[in-house]
Length: 161
Image (tube, rainbow, N blue to C red; front, side, top):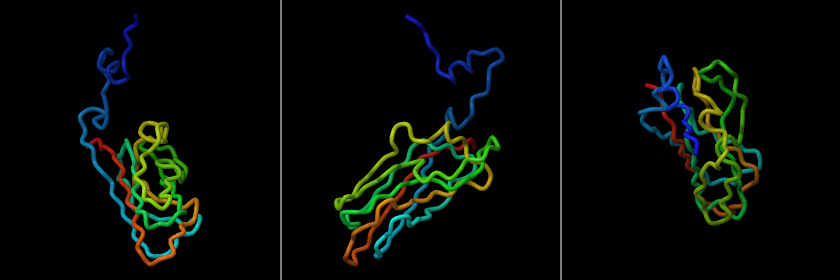
């Protein structure tokens, strides 16, 4: 039987001890919240801009809540615009980095980021200027009445400070 060590555990055993980023050890979770309400039909490729994740954010999870008033159509992806991470590397726009294909299907839906989404270490900590969060319709909504459609976004992240 082998004894294996996680990355941060290994850092604590090294000589000299390697610093573990505060966002990975004893940080507080924060939530980015965005809300969009409309009575119009959303078309394929429409973009909804929700706001910005702050500099230094390390994303851990994402959720999207869509009201059942969108109709039987209406699929949305949740991602980010291009930004520079804290290591100085450019991260290209990715319209479905957080959530792929949230489909209300006439019933409403709460969808979470899938395992393997581009979160955390793969995305990198967000650099100066933050990162813009946006939703992009990949299928038009079919709502035919004037009942408002509500889309809410929750992104869990931590900061170093």
